[in-house]
Length: 268
Ligand code: NAD
Image (cartoon, rainbow, N blue to C red):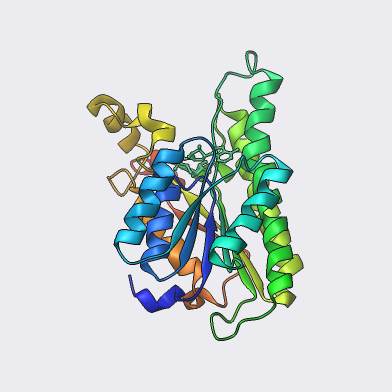
């Protein structure tokens, strides 16, 4: 990762203590950014990541917040600014699943997923815009006033039986991201999303942890391998940097072809 790409910039990564978020923290730090590693409950994991970044010569801080809570998000931004400086990059990555068939899905399961995955991203995006405006342009650091990255999913387009809350939240993220991008482009705030396919993280452990489960999963992935968190981190660094300065309002799908309707491969 070229260190100069994000040198002098500060990033906030929500849900940064595990999986994709942790890889994104490491990727942004390797590109020179100071990183606020947000966690909800796993403080030890967040501190361990901060230590790893510091050992490699980077700057980072572990900061708690439940992104579904307005006051927590405000505090996360305040503490980031105090510890690492005002944010230039905000990666709204935190997300969760509460799976159930529709007949059994409780209102609490629906709300928990929408609150974290959609409202949480909206709260972070709003706070990011306020912070970018307060700080003003820094053309020495970036051509953009600020960059927002939303972690979506291939389920912003692929319907997902038994996961209607999750798919609805990611479909919502897609239109939230595009509407914000349209609203904010004239201010040079870029808003983009990444749609990961199947990435090897704790959120979907049951889908890859046995050889049998992984073989079944691979039938959905034309490229023939499960994704790794680093695949997403590389896309995040690009979208956060001036290398993608003319890119706003897109979902960058990183899925080994999962959205290419692999069921049609032998059936043309
Ligand atoms: P993960 O479970 O390892 O990480 C998610 C993190 O978000 C966890 O650390 C969790 O504590 C945190 N989190 C959840 N709700 C939160 C809240 N309200 N406040 C603060 N933190 C909260 O899983 P992951 O795979 O790394 O997921 C990261 C993102 O990527 C999620 O948005 C997920 O929907 C998305 N995604 C993952 C995959 C995949 O295959 N792993 C595919 C598509 C999209």
